[in-house]
Length: 90
Image: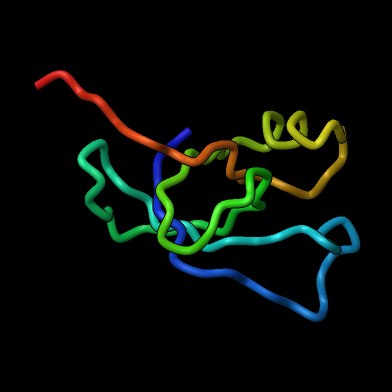
């Protein structure tokens, strides 16, 4: 899992049928302090996240398939939460 910030949405006219009606978002990875790492990933949204929101991303194929209750879904990264706050010990 990692934290990130939604920076955009991906739309496509040609895609695997499993992705039909699923929102795909571009997520910029962030560190614990919320600073961007310069890396990004495309993840399927399950929580209704929008551009600019901090999110929690599950980035592991088997876990992502379990979120969708599918043993053969072609998915790896899933947004599983919108982050309200991050508390770290200094």
